[in-house]
Each structure stands twice: as structure tokens, then as C-alpha cells.
Length: 91
Image (tube, rainbow, N blue to C red):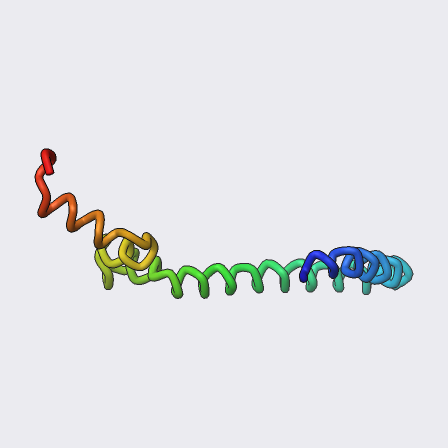
């Protein structure tokens, strides 16, 4: 579904660039700095949010063990751990 929006977003980006190019030089400089800083802050907040959802922040802060992190991220971690600890190599 999102692939159909790609041409539209490119056209909107070109229209926005045209509007920004007609702005006065000082306003253009401030607007571009604010937009760049805003996108950097937005991506940083998104990354921290994803890290928190994945449990990575709890792991690095010592609130969760490596096993807890792996159980949350790897689908068959418990099965693999059970096989390694309870079955012999000949089984």
C-alpha cells in the first residue's frame, strides 16, 4: 500500500522545495536548521522507543539479563536452550 504513496511524496517534496527556495535567505536558513534538527530529534526518539520496546535499554542498564533479551528477540531461544542443556549430543 505504501508503495503507491512514493510518487506522491516525491511530488510533495519538490513542491515544498520550490516554496522554500522562494523564501528570504535568513528565513530559509533558520527553517532548514529547524527542520533538520527536528528530524534528527524525531529519529532519535523513535530509536529510543524501539530500543525500549525490544528490551535493549533494560539490558544495558542491568535490569534484564542476556537470556531475557534473547528470549524476547529470538523466537525459538527457549527451545534451543532446552535442547542444549537437557539432551545429549548422541540423542
